[in-house]
Length: 144
Image (cartoon, rainbow, N blue to C red; front, side, top):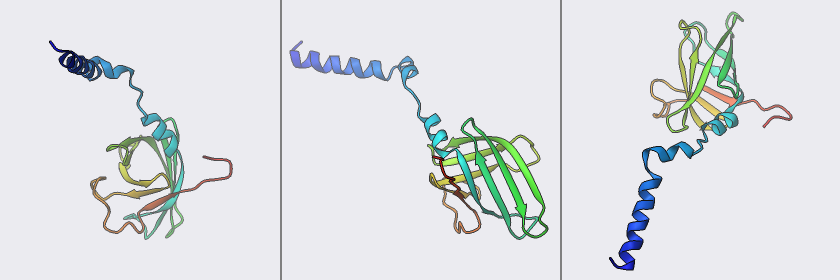
């Protein structure tokens, strides 16, 4: 075997070791970093069958829990939904899973870390008209 062949063989063996099934155990995932970066408060208006306009405040906690406070402008009724949130679809979507199964599951597309857009079916397909479906980050002094 020539020295060039042994170098190529060594490189191939090294590459195979790096992609071996057990090798990924030492790789650190950054999904926790993404969730920490997205944690915070978001406000805006979402569509609702019950009223003309639903003002909401969504708080995403770094531990993966959320609180969604809703206020109907028609009758000033309010509600609070709690649950867990996860980042999905290669860090392009946020999925809200409520604790109460009677509440709807919601999915938001990430425009960037300051804008969430409620989806109408698939998170990977952009909303045709995002007006009335957007939540913006509500930073306060000292946060982020």
